[in-house]
Image 1 (cartoon, rainbow, N blue to C red):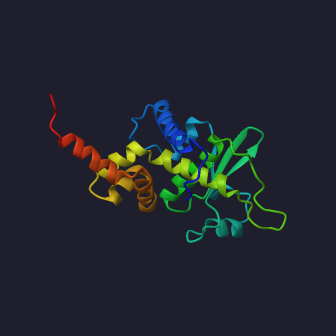
Image 2: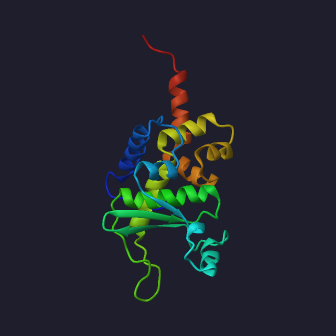
Image 3: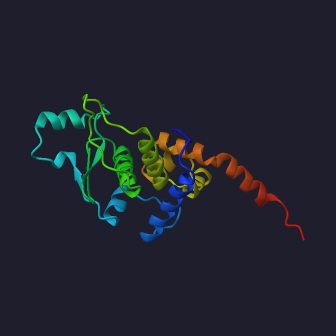
Length: 195
């Protein structure tokens, strides 16, 4: 993930994470699922498995657990947004995929056709990186990453608590520099108070 975001973006992402938790009545370090946030933002969600009009072969192709073909997408009509997601993959992936689409909505990213005129995926890498970073920050903000690093017995326990994969939490630990932050905090707490 590139660290070349527009000026102030990383701080903005942290502020969104705090703001949405406050609006939901959650502590700053509490887990916040994409389902909770979608409900709060009035963004309807539809499971891929509930799309009865979709051909069974298409559902099978899109929902193949070993495939990265489809995780989620935000359908747009003017200002209306609706997220369709693959509910047949691991719950951690569902959580991060929906949050990624919510991030696009929150950031006001313009809707784009899924394919280019040549049939290739139509992807704006900058917008995708912004959506990834905001989604991961919404799931595990900096304060939550520090809390998890200092208070959970294992990475897996912390990841399970926040409803994310071990690799996503490891990324947040690295981006938030929690090991150094924690060391500095312990050092400050162990210093005698000077009078």
